Image (cartoon, rainbow, N blue to C red):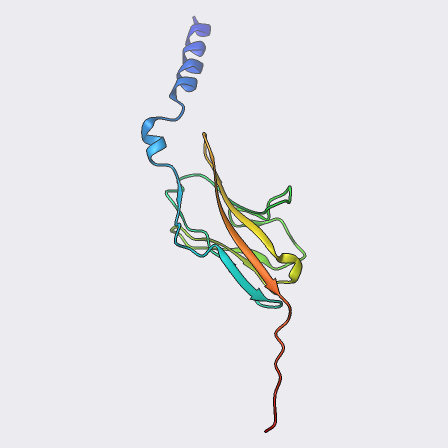
Length: 138
C-alpha cells in the first residue's frame, strides 16, 4: 500500500516540471544597459546587469574563458581583488571591479540559469593605459 503512494508522489513531482506559466515568467535582461565599457587603469568598473523577474534564481558573473565564476548572487569568489556585487532589492546585479588593470580587459557574462535555458548578457570591458596629464606652464 505505501509503495503505491510513494510511486504516485514521485510521478506527480516529475510531471509538475515547468508549466507554460513558468515559461512566460522567465527572467529577462534590460537590453538598454551598456554592453561596452572603456576605462583607464586604476579606475572603477561598474558593469551593469539588470535582471527582471528573477524569482528564486541566482545571478552569476563570469569572465569569458575562465572556468570559475567571479560571483554568485552577492558572494565573491576572489579574495585578492576588490570585486563585488552592487545589488538593490529590485533588479540590479552590477559587477564592481576596483582599480582595474589591463588584464581585466575582456568579456564579462551576467548569467541566470533556469530549468530550460542559460540566459547570458555580455559586457565588454576595455582597460587602457594610465591617464597621463601634461601640465604646461605658459
